[in-house]
Every structure is written in C-alpha cells, then in structure tokens.
Amino acid sequence: MTAFLDALAFLTRLAPARLCEPAALGRCVPFFAPTGLVLGMLCTAAAWLAQVFMGTLPAFEAAKPLSFALASLLWLGLEIWLSRGLHWDGLADLADAAGAPASRFWQVLKDSRLGTFGALSLLVAFCGQWTAVAWHVAVHDWPGLVLAPAWGRVCAVWLAASAFPRDSQSLGGLMKTGACFRTAAVHALIALGAVVALCGFGLSWPQGLALPIVQCGLIRVLARLARERGGFSGDFLGAAIVLGQTWFLLATL
Picture 1 (cartoon, rainbow, N blue to C red):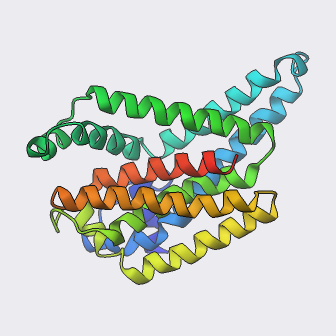
Picture 2: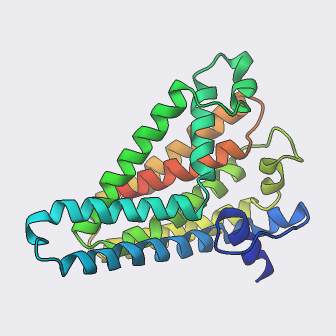
Picture 3: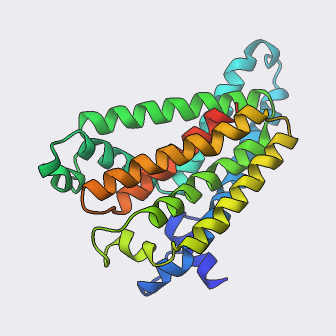
C-alpha cells in the first residue's frame, strides 16, 4: 500500500505530496499500471457523467458531435490536470532535443524553453488524443478509455526495462531499479490480457495484433535513441507515456 501511495503521489495529484527516500521510486514502479487505471476510471466517469448531463439538454440531438468533443476535452483535460502534465512536458523536451544536433542533445533536453519541435509534438499528440477520445465516447467504448492511461504508464516501464539510464541517481536511474525484466514481463502479460478482453468487447483481432506490435516498435525507437545518446532520463519515460496512450486510443478505434 505504501508503494502504491508513493506511485499515486509521484504520478498524480490523487495522493498528498510525500517525502520518500530515493529507493521508494524504484519500489513504486510496479504500481504505475494501477495508478493509470485509477486515472482512467476517474476521467472516464467524468466524461460519462458529462454525456448523461448533456443528454438531458433540449438541443442534445442537434448538437451530439459537440457533446462528444466536450466530453473528450473533459476527459483529456482532467487526465492532464491530475497527472500535472509531467509526461507532456517530457514529450516536448524530448522532441526538441531529438530535433537538435547530437552534440547538443542533453543541453536542449534540459532547457525549460519550448521549441518548435516540442510545440508541434504537443499539438499533434493532443489533437490525436482529443479526436480519438471523442470517437470512443461517441461509440460508448468506456473500457478503452479506462485502460488508456494504464497502457501509457506501462509503456514507461517497458522503456525503462529496455534501456539504461544516463545517470543512475537521476529520476530515470532511480526508476530503472524497479523496472527489471520480471516486472516488464508481468506488465506484458497483463497488457496482452487487456487486449484479449478488449477483443471480447468488440475490438477486431487485426487491431488487437497491431496494438502490441506497433507499441513494441515505438518502444524500440525510444530505446535506440536512448542508447545512441548515452542513456535515458525521466523525459524519455514521460514521452513513452504520451505516445503509448495516444497509440492505444487510436488503435482501439
């Protein structure tokens, strides 16, 4: 329970901020998926309630597409707010650094200013997720919306298990201690179980096959970039969360 609360406090606003020793970050890594599941349930419940409320309005039938867009915006805005936007910041930093010369990679990655590549990556990811969530809301695919944040956070575990950190005392290095092969394998089995369950809810088998295969490819790209740049950092893991969640939402349409 302590490790789970540490994961909630680290990844979300759902638990009070708490001081913990560095080793606690490694111990809370196996609870990234449950934390994502809690986020998914809260955000999906909010979107569902918004749909129920808007369904009582007189002009609902004429403005159905708008109601889907608003419910999607609520889901995505709440997910970003509850997670403090940490993973989105990681995506922006990594996109800016990846677009810079290799010699300046870490200098750009640590720069707090937002560059062109970072801004465009945020725009594309946000629009992609907003559109995909609206589609899920329109077809009442609530299980997919519940699982999406968990899938994204599992991707961070897979990436941490697939590469080495640049600094063992950094955020990425501390998380690496909890992302062993066994943890990654357990998460992979859970993810495959989730895919099978989604197929039971109507996901086609081609989609079910494409979901983990393409996700594996995305993780390999990030892991290769980390190896070429001397290791990964927390920004790599944040980018893995956003990209994984985006792919999950699009693949399960």
